[in-house]
Length: 248
Ligand SMILES: C[S@@+](CC[C@H](N)C(=O)[O-])C[C@H]1O[C@@H](n2cnc3c(N)ncnc32)[C@H](O)[C@@H]1O
Image (cartoon, rainbow, N blue to C red; front, side):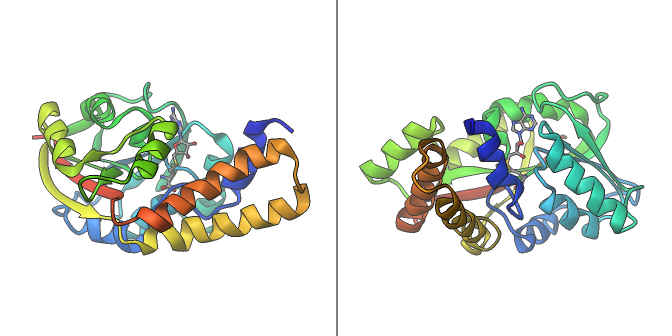
């Protein structure tokens, strides 16, 4: 078994593919002024669409959910069809660094836990042209919550290849892009566990049972378990922060 299919086998079975929760999506949404009734919304790096579904309950507008993994998009389409929301939720397979849309097309771009793939400032710069003047962007990304993180935690992030920045450094990056920062919001701890790490741990345990000591399996499961352990030990040092911004 190659690594990639195995990785997707795990992530396709999870309720979501990154930290987040409906309470956070709702709370962050409440930081936005009212959007037009037929708001045009883009959800970037939507995964299997947990936040897409939460957004659909908060707006009467249309949501285009974008991801580069078609099976996630198929789950969204199946859910939207079953819930008679096919007219308001569309999917598009595309890469976030080459979005196939018109300039100024969206009232709001929303992205939970996915901008790290491009880098925070790079992602904001790349997506901003697709937002109407006066429209909004909301993204969540990893950030340090405390200074002087322990060496073990730093080494782990270095290995992951993405070192979080402080929230102040991220605010500065927002400023560099010309977006106006309206609010920030820290994802509550429950958003890491309930729909993400708890089901992930259950899946890891199941797969260890069925695959035993298969090295290809361990190569995927060990890092996931290590990630969860890092969060369990060091969660006071880092987390996810939402940034709510306007394209003035
Ligand atoms: C950490 S997950 C977050 C998913 C979802 N927003 C959530 O919070 O559950 C990141 C998502 O980005 C998608 N992705 C990775 N690289 C991408 C790219 N270049 N373009 C579009 N989506 C990408 C992955 O397939 C995955 O669904």
